[in-house]
Length: 208
Length: 208
DNA sequence: GATTGATTATACATTATGTATATCTAATTT
DNA sequence: AAATTAGATATACATAATGTATAATCAATC
Image 1 (cartoon, rainbow over the protein chains, first blue to last red):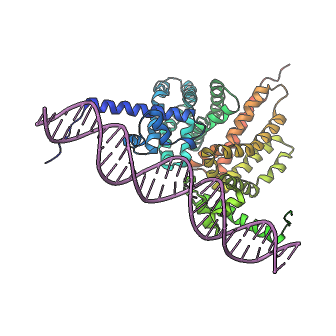
Image 2 (image 1 turned 30 degrees about the vertical axis):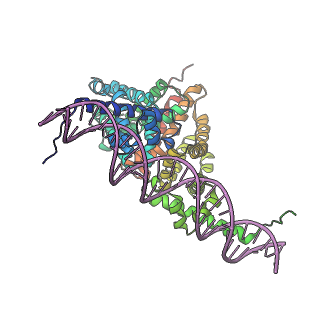
Image 3 (image 1 turned 90 degrees about the vertical axis):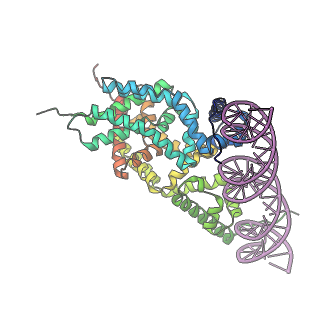
C-alpha cells in the first residue's frame, strides 16, 4: 500500500526555525571567523546547537548552506531598495543611488566578504554568486541605455557597463575600504569614478 | 665532535633543479586545473616526479610552494619593465605604460588567477601577496605625486592612488576580461579610466 | 672508506566533507 | 489509543588533504 504522507504545520515550523537558527549561526561564524578556511559545518552545527547531520538534512551540502546564507544576507541587505532607485526619473541620480545601495550592501555584513572568499574554492558556488550579481549588471545596463546619447556606440556602452560593474563590485569596495575609508567615503569615490566612466557616452561635439 | 659539514656544488645544483621542476609542475597544475580546490601537493609532486615529502623539504608547506610559484611568475612576468616605465619623462605616459605592464602580467599566466584564489583560504599567503602588491601602490603613488597639481589636496591624491590601485588590480582585470575583452582592450579601457581618475588632481579654475 | 645532504619509504595524527544505517521523538492520522 | 511519519540524532565509515616523525637509500664529498 502507498505510504500515507501528510504535511505537518508544527513540524515544518520547527524545521524552518532550525533552518533559521543554522543560517544565523553560519553567518555569525563567517562574520566572527578570521577566514573562510576555518568555516566548517562542525563549527556551525555546534554554534546552532544541532548536529552536523541536521545541517546536511536542511542544506544538502556546505555549498547549499553558503547559498542560503548569501540569500539571507541579500534579503536583509537593503537590495530591495533597488526597485525604487531604478524607478527614479533622473538616470544619473538613479546610478548614484545604486552605488549607494551596493556600498551599503557590501558594508553591512562582513560575512559577504567571506562568501566572496568561498567563491575561490567552490566553482559552483562561485557561479551561483555570479548569477546573483547579474542582477546588478542588468541594472547598470538599463541605466546606461537611458543615459547614453543616441549616437553612442554599442562598444562605448558596453565599456561603460563593464567598468561600472567592476567599480561597484565587492572587490573594488573591499580594496577602497582597506585603504582606510568609511562606507560613505568609498561611496562618494565610486560615484565620482562612475560619473567619469559615463563621459565617453556623451557627445563631446554636439554639432550638426 | 662537531659534525663536519660541507657545501656540495653538485648536490645544491641538483636540489635547485628539483626545486625548479616542482615550481614548474605547480604552476602548470594551477594553470590547467579548474580550481584551486583541486590543487594538492600530491598532484604537484606526482606531476614533478618527486615525493610529496620532497615538496615539504623544499618549500616547507603548501603556502611556501605557492609563494615560490608567485615569485617565479613575477620574475618572468615582465614586471622588470616597471623600472623603465617609472623612469619615463612624461608621467602620464609612464602611467599608461604601467597599466600596460600589469595587464600583461595578469594576462600572461592563468596561474596568477588561481594564486589570487588561494588568498581566500590562506590569510598569511594573502598577506604575502598583498605585500608584493604594495610595490604597485608605491609606483602609482610616485606617479601621482608627479602628475598632481601643487594645489591638489592630500585627500585628492590619496583618492586617485587608491582608485588607480583598484583599477589596476587583478580582480578588475579579471572582471573586464570575463566580459569578453582581449588583453589590449582591457588595457585601453583601464587606461581611460585611470585618466579619468586623474582629473580631480588638475586645477579646473587656474585663477589667482 | 666514512660521512653528509637530498630524497624516499612508511607510518601516523588531524581535520573536513560527505554517505549510510539505525534509532529516537514528537506531531499526525486512522 | 495505536500506527505512522518527518525531522533530528547517534554511530560508523569512506575519502582526501595537510602536516609531522623516523628510518632507509643513494650519490657526492671529505
